[in-house]
Length: 256
Image (cartoon, rainbow, N blue to C red; front, top):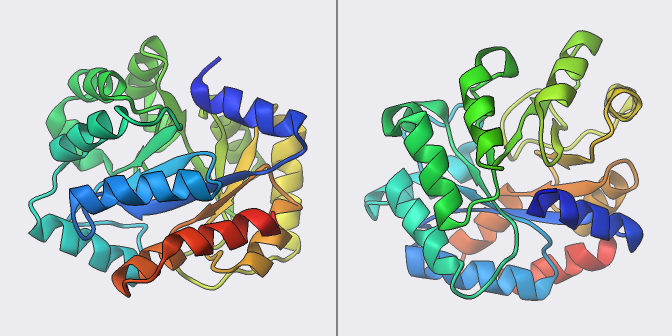
């Protein structure tokens, strides 16, 4: 059982839902990211998602795009993000997930990336533009190194797609609450409820919902439907505005 799987199992036993905050590695600096990770864990985060800055982020909305641009101006790369994780691992064992895109991974080399990510202390990866149909090599290598591969589903996913993603995902399944980019407005409707119900029917894996959740009220609604709540743009926006993210995370923790 991987560290992410153990976290969800422990939370289930405690009748709690997973709080998974997202921040961009290197925004506004790598040192600041280390500080934010510590603050989020102290505030009640269960798993932390680190974005890897990339020039063509297909799934990211304007808020996270700008965070990526700020990080790239600092010279932050995939390699430096792995070094950051290695540094974070000196002080905490909280599960860490990288959200990146396939181009940097392909350029790095799949075997080298997986091996070095695991060595640094990464527990899982989300690669939005790598679909299970084309991820055979990546999944095989990741399984060998016990690195969780987390794939996405959306309100438009068919039953065949749900079954395919449920089979390929390790750690948990990432349900994208909207058919759009990060930071768009959350919409909890019948389509979302029906797809989540189907996922639970065909997959014996936890589901975490992301995209569009920006406050404690929305987090509470989502946590009633899934095992985890992912919040990204709202936190990234607070970082950009120089606000205290620790208190914000605490309010979300209390809500779910």
